[in-house]
Every structure is written in structure tokens, then in C-alpha cells.
Length: 460
Image (cartoon, rainbow, N blue to C red; front, side, top):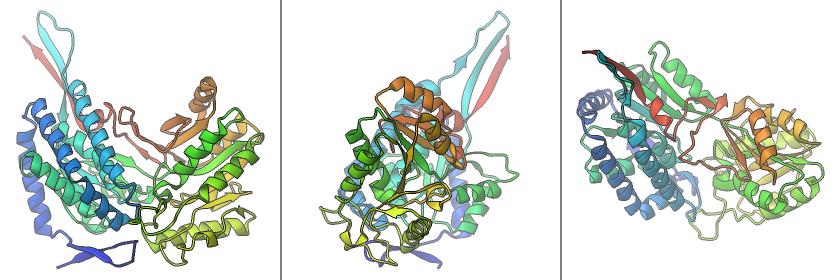
């Protein structure tokens, strides 16, 4: 039997071991999923709502165990992991409520001779490929609305966080979701590509790297199926001259280093007006030094290890290359004794004297590092913020909402924030431009992606 092990970043030991799905198990999952979906789409919307809400409650009841297991699998401090289950519940409940209006027939004007309306019909089987960094939150983005829309779902979890799929399955089973509607498969890369090519898969939802997104498109070539891709980011922030500096420092430090910077919408580069540059940098560096790097199961730990040593090495390499090109490191790694070379434990780093010739300011870091540049004003800030192949979120820190709106219309991104960052509001569509993806999840608009419009034109 072909198996894989979950190597915990906490101690670099095996935390769990699971078997990869066999060809027979995959075919069985597709067969049962297709049969269950045909019946499910006939269920009244209020029945689907009731079951999905029960599943949310069942997951919340397991919150403590889920949180500890998540810390072991991917390294986030235990003081924060329960928040992901709460976030799942918030997003899921919003999407359940949003379905009522979005999935209602659109009735057009009738005449004496004809009746016309538009109905949103489910695609069929949705394949949801979920990442390790936020396995429950990203699952809520696609799985709950897919089920609400009348689809069935097969989840392919990351091999780093496979227990998330098992916990979600248990929650749906407790809620009474009919058998076959939600299933999960542990798959290798080549098997995943073959599954995407299978005629039974009708929609693909993928959250992961930009490289992974390209692989998804290649795997689906010629299938003509719709897909939602949430990919990489190099999210910028701009601190204007009129910003509340204390608020900006607090928000951007958290936006850069929460989850050890392992978020697609983490703040990875900051541009500060020259009149506030020194005050901002001094405060940002001081607050960064207050982090406590260590065992994520310890209650005092505020910064856990990265998911693995290889990812930490990538960030260390970016930092060292930037320093060799003239950047100034402001954090002494010795102040973080847990930071050890060739391990997942990496101290946070703030780099000054950076520019866009450096990989650190161009390429996704996905780790606890941020570069800060001084700018002359709005025009230069916008130019630099847009100087990126990515476009997920941007944030503007200012007391002038009109100025923020003016800047926001010029910024090439899916979400523009003012005086906040690194947050998903379930009422707003989550989407990216350029190499940060295509399509959208969350908000009522997500249902337009997870369904197919069908026209009815009846002549009397």
C-alpha cells in the first residue's frame, strides 16, 4: 500500500500516516458522488441549509481537538488555531444565508403567449483542492457553497493537513448529509491530474501556488470545465503621510507575520511616505522584536515554525541575497534563540534599503519577512505597488477615505483595503488578478461560479 507521512514542523517527526487512494477507490468515489448529486439537487434549498448549518455546529463542537491537531500538522501557535474553526463557521454561515437569494429563479416579464425564467443549476461534481496553510477556511470558501448550490464535492486535502478532510467528513456525517455528497481522497500529483481529466469532474476549485495553478490549467486542458483559482501573492501596503502611524504599525506587523507569513494575502512589502518613514520603521521593528518564536503548543508562543525546513530555507535565501545586494537587516536572529538554520524555525525579519531589483520585493516569500521602502508620494507608491506579477490584495493606510478610493481604483488587485489588511469578509468576493488567480469565491457572486445558468422559454 502506498502511504504518506505527515512530518510535523514542531519536532520534524511523523505525526500521522495515511494511504493514498487506489484507482478503484477513486472510481467508486466518483460513481457514488454522481449518484448522490442527482438526488441532492432535487432537495429543497431549506433542507440543504439545515444540513450545512448542522455540519458547522458539529465542527465547532470539535474545535479544541481540531485546533491542537492543526498546530501539530502545520505549526501555527495553539493560541491562534481555534480561530480558524471560528472563521470557518463565520464564512460558512454567511454563504448558507446568501444562497437563498442567489439561487432563486430569475423571473422575466411574462406575456399572454410565453413564460420565461432563468434557473441556476449545479455543475455536478466539484473537485476542491485545499491547501495546508488554512485548510478549514479555504474549504469553507468552496465546499459549503458548492453543496448549497446542489453540487456534490470531492475534497483533495494537502498531504500536510490530511486530518482536516477527516474532521470535515465527520461533521457532515454527524449533520446527516446523504452518503456520497462529501468525500475526500488522498492523492499524489499525477493521480490528481488524471482525476481532473476524468469526465465526471465538472468544476475545479484550487487554492495554492501560481505554479500549481498552471498545473491545474494544463491538467484541465480540453475539458472546457470552469475553475476557480486562488493563487500566489506579493501583497503591498502603502502608509500615507496622513496615516495613523500606531494603527498602521500594529496592523501591518500582524499582517506580515501572522501564521509566520504563510498566507497568500500576507503583507510582503510596505511603502511609506518619506515624512513618516523613520517613525514607522522604528515602531515596526520594535513591535516585531516582541514576537516569541518557539514551540507552537506553548501558551507564550506567538510565532511558530514554518511548515517545513525547505520553505524556511527559501526565505533565508531571499533574505541573504537581499543583504548581499545592499539591504539592511534590522532584526538580530540571535534575539530569537529558537531560530535554527536548516530547520522550520525562522526568526522574523524586517529589511530596509530594499528595491525592486531584489527577489525579496518581486517574488513571493510566504514566510516571516517584509521589506520596507520610502516613497515620495501617492504616484510613486501606486507605481511600485503595481510593479508585480501578482494582484491579490493591497492596503492603504490613511485618514482620507477619498484618497484611499482614488488610489484603490488605480491599484491592480482583487481587494483594496483601507486601514486593515490580511482579512476576508465573506460578504465580499475573494479574487485575484494577474498571476494571483481567476474567478472568485465568497459573497453571493460565488454562486455564479458554482452553478450554470439555464434558460426556460415556454410558449403557451
